[in-house]
Image (cartoon, rainbow, N blue to C red; front, side, top):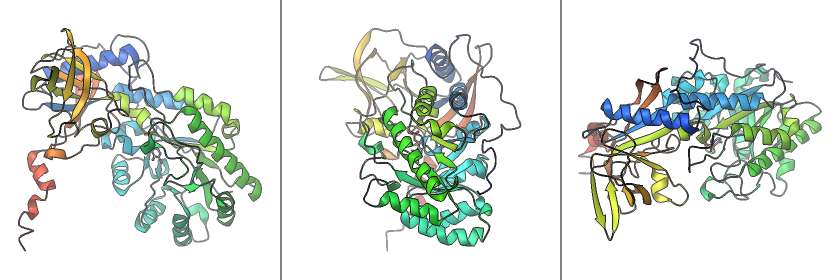
Length: 479
Ligand SMILES: *Cc1c(COP(=O)(O)O)cnc(C)c1O
């Protein structure tokens, strides 16, 4: 059996993290009244400290306490179901919130990085995530990306047959005769267990583009043979889907992958597959502040459905994204104008498609909660009216919320788009050349009286927008 680091879990960084502070409200830090109290304090302070105002009508905020608490809940959930000393590496799917400071914060909480592009790998490296705590996925890795990963010592999950053939060549070159010189290498499989409620995010349908489709004729035998032929192939990887995929279906995908690992190991006569990477995909509750990230429920379900995976024979890798960040981010914007059309009241704000593209283009699948605050940043108390909350972009569908009952908004009030910490403001969309908003993290001081902000990303300047739009090549088409 190949040598592997005995415990791939990142060591906590040298600076000890302070106990998660929060306002006096008791309860879990990931959700519920404590999270709402922190959010309200942050909005009030953002207005008071001028992070949002007439000249700066849009800002994104991240709740550092909530992110830390979520990471701790993840560790605890799997600690409770794994055998003592089990090798567990939790990684953060960087695509969910590709901001260096967020990857760094999670690293501080002992969470590594799952990356799927050269950009994501680069920012994980800037965040200081160790190679041994980084996993490279992606269905389209180039030869150069594969070579870089192997040279850096980053685990790779091959997505299919052709990629495995590329790895064959590289393994000979990088590892020579000593496969211990190689990082852990695995193969992604698609258990074809079916779709959740959002097709675009269902990665384990019969025809999904990811991994080796396990139920296709001959595929399973091919996979087993591929492992027997390659002693350096030691991991199986599955990611059954994201938002909209029920936990049962995700557990079914993991169960199928575990059964395959057992089959490979029985045929090999040794524990060749020593680690199963179970992906991420935990859905988030976008309807209220009541539910936590659900790591505990999922870990318990997995341990119940697939007990052999937790008895100590296998290492585990997880790759959660949305569940670690979505609930801990919000976008705060000023209401610029209000109007009424055809009897519908409309508040025109600066938050639209550029910070919530999925919500604007697929509102049925990605509804967002919005909260209204007054001109001082205090929760609005006015009479409730049905309103649309519109963004600044020049198309009619640019609405954050449609027909929503909210305290009546007025110019100068504020609107917060909640639960936008994942796959939203960190994924700006350049429609109408709208600049990316600044992102600030916030921390409520121990006594709850003071809110500290730290910059995570500067707002894009207009000259950066021009540069990104080819400002340097303005004469380029005048051949
Ligand atoms: C997107 C993705 C994840 C993270 O999914 P979430 O739904 O954000 O948890 C993990 N692994 C892989 C391979 C992915 O593509």
